[in-house]
Length: 267
Image 1 (cartoon, one colour):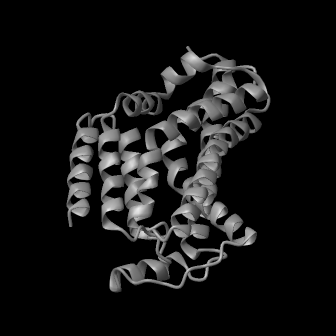
Image 2 (spheres, helix red, strand yellow; image 1 turned 60 degrees about the vertical axis):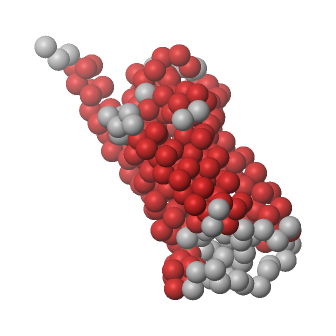
């Protein structure tokens, strides 16, 4: 028999689920639009993708890395990470919303979810800061083209090779398990209150970063603003985290990345 309190809780959980899904969809949609339009860049990501397909290897004039341009590149990276990573993190966020409703945050679950997601995105903001620094370094030593991709095939091959080896590393697998099983994550890491939500969001973000940072670094290989490459990586990350019935996926991807890396390195 379902009690009155049980019915109210079930209705609240359903409403929370719809609201959280709607909120996440808006966040991802806005981030995707920003990325596609290449806001602040000299050309949109659509144009750069077309040029990469029609004129591969095309060089463009270098850009001066002023403070304003550096900030724009950092924002581009962060927004792109939001568009790529939030969809695969949605099950964890939805589970947290349900747990927050049932625990001490039941009077304001949406605030708790927002704080949790902010902690998760903060970690990817730190990654974006590091990616910006790496991109600036590559440009300064002439290893990155105006199309935002590595100019030297051996270096690109080495990065693919490293990504392939990392796919089957113990650290990768440990982080991936945390991402694939959010119930276990919350069982072992639950913290109450707003500060607890922020800490859990950041902790989950670190696991996610440990799982995917090398894959995100592959944007330097295919082109930071190449929409086809961005979509392919985002889809693969989603498959890794959500398709738990594919245990051989890491090994298959490792083989593909290693073969691709060796091909590029010795081309």
